[in-house]
Image (cartoon, rainbow, N blue to C red):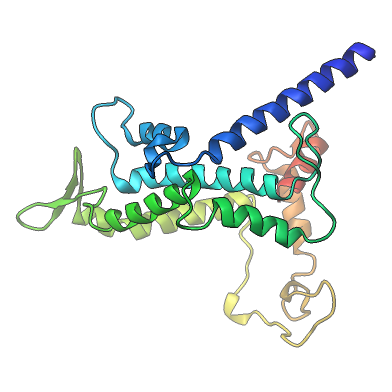
Length: 253
């Protein structure tokens, strides 16, 4: 037991020292006004290369990397301003119960406001510049048309206008198949135009299904029977409900 407690204490001290390292990197000041003199800004430039290191990424590809770094830096600085608990190994006390806004502002004004010579503000500025550049970049996908305007191409892929006109029918038929699968191929004789509802009924649990004119109050029994008897259903096996699968499905919905 004593050894376990000692190991936990050593691990917690390691985590505090790791946080101190991250904080030191995030609060490093520019040398002679040069942002690249800080370790974080210098290393972030590596993310601007492609995976094969043969060219630079476009601005719209690089900005998400900057956004991720900005988000993490803000979390680190927020924890420095208002730590949830004290860091004994590195001498950072727990946040006070009063004047928390003043303590937050002291960190914000020192490291997070534009014009301060620290990595966070430089990356925010770079991201803003990158977003402006991204508007002038060519689109990520370029299509070309055949001379007769009947075929659209993208790389090795091509689509004729005849097939394009079949897309709505395809998605409608796929939607019908999915709906049939969801209700286990039940074909209810229901006219949607004749459905009635009571829009002023505010009672708990009411829906149009319970309106007496719709005769749907027991329709769930048909669905339940189909879920049990259908060959496509996985909710029953060998004449018994598969309760574990049912509970999993219920939690998922």
